[in-house]
Length: 121
Image (cartoon, rainbow, N blue to C red; front, side, top):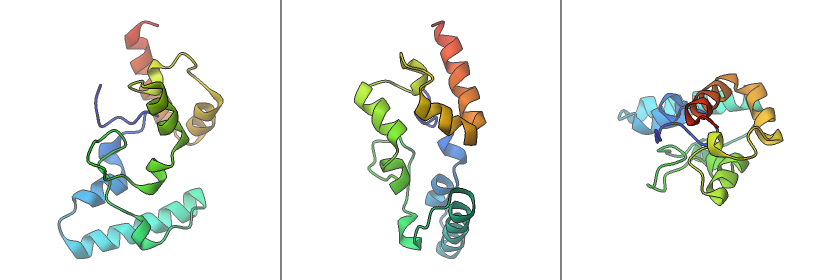
């Protein structure tokens, strides 16, 4: 399993929060975190504070550095509880939670469908 593909099918390595974690220039990092705040507010109606945009190494990383929304993610919690590598491996694929998520993130569905097809389930 590619550790940069989240349980839900998102690609962590293209996530703005993952990328800002790797930014070395502190000024650029702060500017990017402010852009993320604005994006989350405009696109998801989420009102985070600057200090809420924490470092994140991806939802499957073992470093402990995880964005709050990822920590609270019901999809992640479910997959971890079921001890599956991703939702593509789940017997209940596609559940209502994923259906709702895929309405906003169709590329995640495509990735999980491809993974599932490769499993020959």
